[in-house]
Image (tube, rainbow, N blue to C red; front, side, top):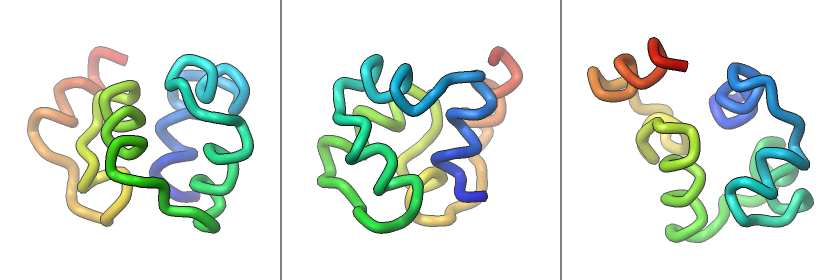
Length: 75
């Protein structure tokens, strides 16, 4: 499972709920979760802010940072 989908699952959200909260289309979020689209930088930033995780962690396979870990413990 990719990290983007995993972050959504951890919050217990459907794609529709997450997309609406983030301000992107369900189609785009679905394609990003499937790895079919990468999204532009602004979209990646909006998504990372929504999930409280770094862009690097969600989209580029970087290890989780201390900041990310602290935010996940709150969720």
